[in-house]
Image (cartoon, rainbow, N blue to C red; front, side):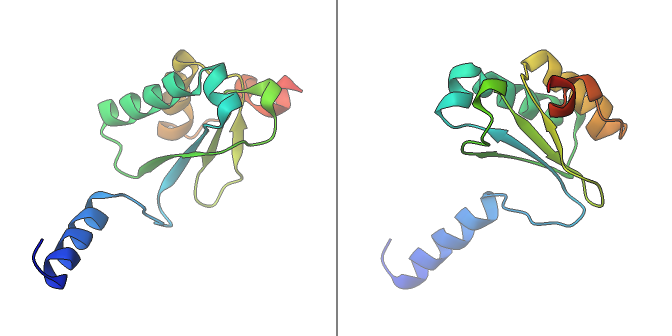
Length: 121
């Protein structure tokens, strides 16, 4: 790095690589990755979502992480936000459940009701 222009070029390249899309057409998968979520197995769940989305070539899906969602006893927790629909909160997730959620909810539009917070309560 020799100049401000070089620094700006690095910044632009990095921002282009980081996907922080706010597309209105994008489905968002948010995984709770606070200490409680990680201890309950959120990392393998997040990896399973990333692998399943990549395997299916789904380009309109953004996977992110967040801190504590507030229901530690139900971790790992995943929230799915589909444009034009209500947010769905899945609880006590596992990598196997993540694959089913991608297949049924993300691809086919059918909420997997038995994994939701409503079914757990």
